[in-house]
Length: 437
Image (cartoon, rainbow, N blue to C red; front, side, top):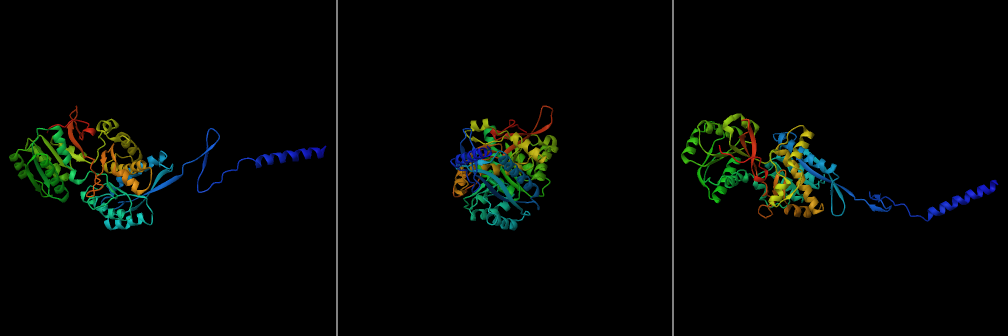
């Protein structure tokens, strides 16, 4: 009986081994490929993964530290959101996520040149984001072009960087030459009775460049420039200029320079009781402390690259015939505040949007190939929480930002008589109508 039991057991084991030998072979793992089971019991090849490296320098030290830190915070927020959402899927099924490599440029142009070379070569960065400031970006741009790396620039408004024949450099900010031209567009649309303009500006390179550009633009639209004068940066008494303004009797004043001179100019105009219905000044009005002027601040307009108040929406994109890419401004602001316990500045918004534009171009291209990504950027025409984004594709100014308008804020009084900032231009992002002073 024992022998019979042993024989039966052996026969059973042999039958089981034979059945296994006739079954399907187990898949071997190679090159990181994996399989997933389907509901029907079959299998499908899972998408492969690819981590894309974004390289940039940040001013962890030096004079650009504050602005640069905020710019990097915005970029990091975008990367985290994309990665947490599972990445971007390419045409071949590859799922792309993002990592970054950065160095401290010390707010120094010589460091920028050395470090962007390292990022493009030793570190093998796939794409680049610019450092903060036009000066540092002008140093990084030829390196990016030399090594054929697409670079999105943010924190860099100088037009000249985009007239050097580069083919892979793309600007997020409104160019400096258009800092005040939007004010002319605003007047044309909202105050058609305005015909005569006075341009009074600080005599520094930035302010003079902006003033020259707005003068030429206004004249091209048929406006009469009744006064065009500059003042020294140290000016504290604007009486001579105010007298000339009164004599020339403009319908609007454009110009200014930086915070101290701009706020002093606005205060002295109010003290003199100068009756000019509209005024737009550089730099000073968007600052919260401009409200310290009290009634002298009412009606004063100022340009900003972006403001949390701006209400660019999917509905506004549809009305303008543009493609909308989220998130909304409210979502960006709340997420940024949760991450950094701080209200985002336009520097942070610029960093976020630089990443978002790169990601959108990769998505549209369906590829990481530089030529395909550049083609997607060339055809981009979007509305985002940051505003309209579109690039010049001419050989003369390739990559120059031509879609984004400065956001113009105006100080107004609310129902309780409190001074508040309102966005009055462009129309797609406005929170209130333009008022007279």
